[in-house]
Image (cartoon, rainbow, N blue to C red; front, side, top):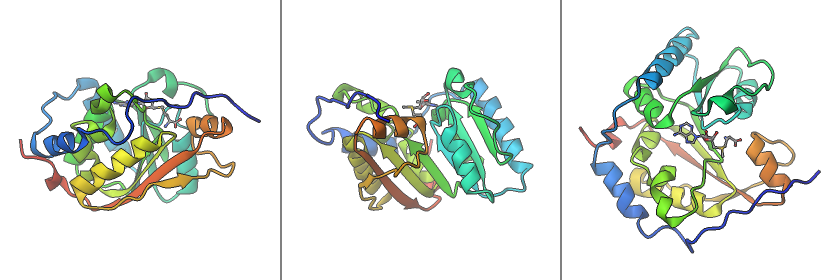
Length: 229
Ligand SMILES: C[S@@+](CC[C@H](N)C(=O)[O-])C[C@H]1O[C@@H](n2cnc3c(N)ncnc32)[C@H](O)[C@@H]1O
């Protein structure tokens, strides 16, 4: 079976010239955006759900879309709890079968959810960023996670952080940002799903013949990575 899915085009020939400056800024200037009340409530409910599961090791699926990966990760790691977070009510509401008992889907904005998670002392053992929106125009660097002020929070949570994308440059930039902010090498690797797709986007891109890329960074829990307010 084949699919057609557009290959990403960008006006950027290589890693963004402003990436290092933006990472440095995120490491030195606190993110002051107020937390949305609906995300506070969604986080509190997720926190209570987690606490009721005897603090089992946590896997975060950040930007989980319809939650296929959340389901698959929960099945693959029955000893863990898996929380999938996405801001799209439409995607989260699509029917994809019953959720395993150790999985939960949460509608929330990650920029706030990550900050609340760090403040609450969450320490995910695994943290997935699967096919984030690429924002391929150079002018949109600040919307990519590696160019966003929340980037240090993602790293500070710690654990095994895995990013996958069909845009190699996104993964390359993310690797540069991890090295700069956390001093950890995170080599960019080709990802070959071999018919075992974790997400819908992974399936779509692979069946369109696009190469896929990933990186894994093993990170310590380091709240002190954030600038003090
Ligand atoms: C390209 S889709 C990938 C979805 C899924 N991971 C997959 O591979 O099928 C990116 C997802 O990230 C979500 N997203 C983007 N920015 C977000 C944010 N700030 N907070 C929560 N979700 C966000 C979008 O709603 C979308 O579902």
